[in-house]
Amino acid sequence: MSTEAGLRFLLATHRYSTRRVAAVFGVSQCTVQRWVTKKPGARRPPGPLCVRAIEEAVLARWQPRIGARRRARAEAEGFVFHTRARFGFAVGAGSSDDPRVRWISQCLPGEVARSCSPPGTPARVSSSS
Image (cartoon, rainbow, N blue to C red; front, top):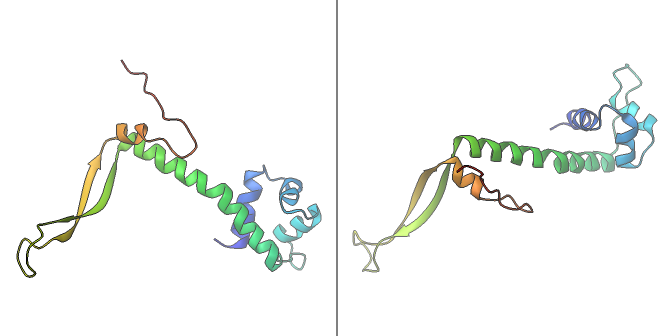
């Protein structure tokens, strides 16, 4: 994600208030206005430290939204769980029973996703009787 896109996202998150975004980074409101203005010649890119701070602020706000969206989709539609396991017997090398790693894919319903609580939140209890 570009710095410009990150700033647009942060502005949208803070209801398009350059004052609130400036408070997040500890800079003046005019500085944020210079970063996002569309006037030719008036735009100034943020410095390297501010670019890093913008990226971190976007990740801190963006990633929880992605997780919540994926969790809601898994709860509604179910999901596919992929894992690997070793199957076979302990026999001499070259035998057809020699242990091998196999991939296992299992389609799971939404009830399984609802019973798994995300980190930091209590498990949900369904009220269906």
